[in-house]
Image 1 (cartoon, one colour):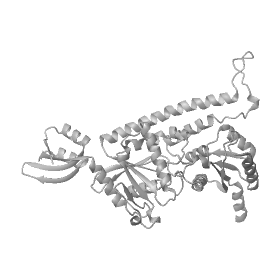
Image 2 (tube, rainbow, N blue to C red):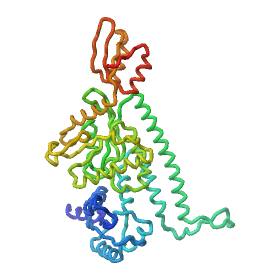
Image 3 (cartoon, rainbow, N blue to C red):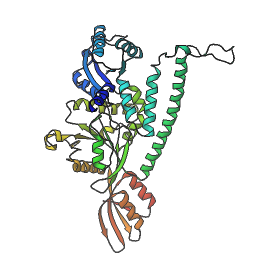
Image 4 (cartoon, one colour):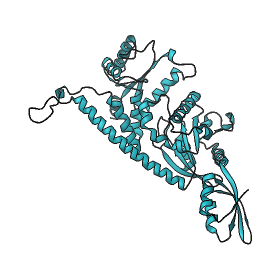
Length: 439
């Protein structure tokens, strides 16, 4: 009985073929190799539960407008799909609506491109209201150009009333209009979410705590590092795009200073333009961050190319005024997964890099100390003479700054404290009767 059930499960499993069209002439030496790109596509496909039964790199001499692939390649693909009983073909490239439909006709099965695949992954992972709204918006914008006529009996819907109404809209036009209306509504809802997040950020600035944002290529270990530093239980698995929704927690640094740590969506090469626009809000925490931790999977054979992809997205954000131009000065490069390479000692490090293992905990104390030191760089050291009776001023300094020294005298208390420029201005406005002396 168990055997027959297992066989039944195998039959219902969705079988997939992953195809990478590769143009040698269009790829320079510094771009990832075809095999590495194919393995990434296989990982993306497997992450949504598809069973990969075939994977191939197809070298393109030229792009055909009808099917992208050459005629002989399409014929070979059709034979392979039938032989392997493939249910869906994943083409790791961007297909036009016509190319997608033509390939489906030729292969006799469902065909999705890289954009459709990533959208499916995002749809399966998004958990918060913001995430689901963004996924639906991206899906609708993607589908709007791929509407096909499915209801020939609704070729024309009669307009007007009674029998005198003229020709109305086609079913495709009606679907396109409904999708358009829904997109407008979703954009309004997302704008409301962004306004709410903006209010939350303003509230944090009033506290205020510095923000440290984790960025990096998908599956680099950001969520594992987030859990290790905060003790949280953010979903973390060895799969691509395990986390989509930004998560924030407060952590205490060695100096006692509190910061907010933010986990963000993973980056990926050739991220579809539909997703860059739809998921803009998930990167807003990066724009507001005082420190950006660029988490890299240093054990990955394609780590250098992944770094280039992440920095390319950040540069694009800076060009679109989503990120301050000084963002490179705020980055600390975190070389993760050193446990796979023999430990932190096996990795060359600089002042702007630090080697860690989020799994074993190696290097985490050093990382926290580095964050502490980087935040301190932007702070001023000031000495204040406080009246002994003024406990409120003393408590304020302890809460918002780092007290370096304290000397209690008969009538006053001398406190030397490190404060950010903003906090110093706030303190001196609120307690204007206290005179500062530069330490």
